[in-house]
Image (cartoon, rainbow, N blue to C red; front, side, top):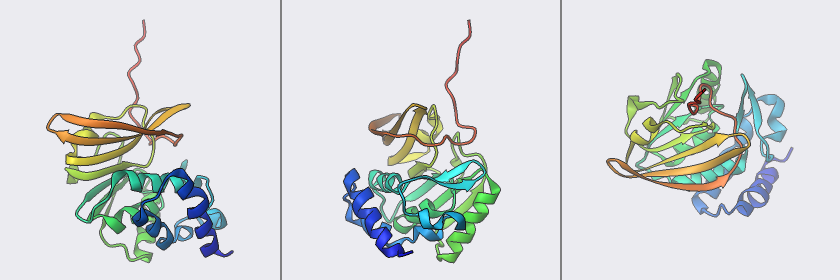
Length: 217
């Protein structure tokens, strides 16, 4: 398979039409070899507009959603980043390419091991991988400049917002099927945040994701 041709088609036919025009983001998608982060059985589908199964009930996000996240959080070289859900390590690599350091938390040990193997193979050193449940927040290394949740959450725990530096950005897909919204939250003060609904989408929920309290009468 001609992956370079497929990569070009991915950017021109999937990414750009979704209003992803940031030259830094587009350049990174050309550089990062997505096919080297997927399970061997799905290698030829690595650049297709689909989720790629990783096992353990988890999947890689479609390429255009990964690109949309990168464009939304506006990464800077000085940013300390928290990623919830390491997966195969591909999104981790994208974040690490333009951030100072990424702390990536994965609840499935086998996937964390997969991410570690892939990051080492691609000489990505500015990442700390940890195994644990980050669905309600992960303050160990906070506050952070950028937080990215790679799975959805019916309710966004306030802890994530409070783990941001002032000016920090949080990307999360919030809601339950069939209504989920990609949301960007920016901390603008001690107890104030700006929330922007970006677009509607559907993403698998994080394991143990917070849910709204339901009252029974």
